[in-house]
Length: 237
Image 1 (cartoon, one colour):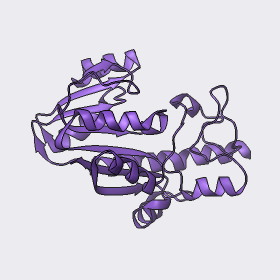
Image 2 (tube, rainbow, N blue to C red):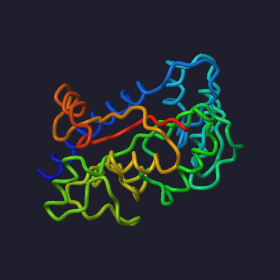
Image 3 (cartoon, rainbow, N blue to C red):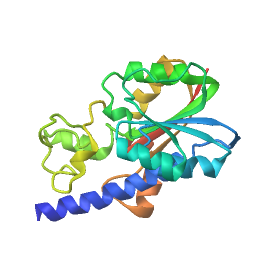
């Protein structure tokens, strides 16, 4: 029974994650010849699809620590992918990019102040950043805390996925996706970006546990503060 609940939760998570990716893609601005940096670019498939849908003749750079994924990004998707740690100084000069993207990355970052400062440094004045992450104040995280468990979105150990008996990934292999060390609310993420010289242009929510499909789409649009995922577009002043 417990195993079936976890499998169903994985399906709910997948539905919410797909909605996050769709709403994230809608945040891209139409442009010509923009220079883009994707932080945690993985194999490059997502950023290539998102950028090509809105940006004509985009030049896309990427940073990731997985060498095999970098090779695919370069060969298959034409990404200028670098083997680099996004928690260290970015290997680019200041005011270089029109757009920086970070989808499901910031929750893995230990020093988020340095991370946001680096994004600001490499962006051109008037350039913008797109960030999406899991939401600490989602209803399912609040429910877990009321029960005395760790929030679903937070990890506390590198050795085991402990602290919440219903966590997605406990039996489905998602624990390999990486440890979540910083989890934000919509308000908190806004405040952090403002602190480093960004103006918030748009926000979104995606997923609304335990609902899926149409109801999840509607509720997360109406109440982004308690959705499973949050995202925003912010412009460098």
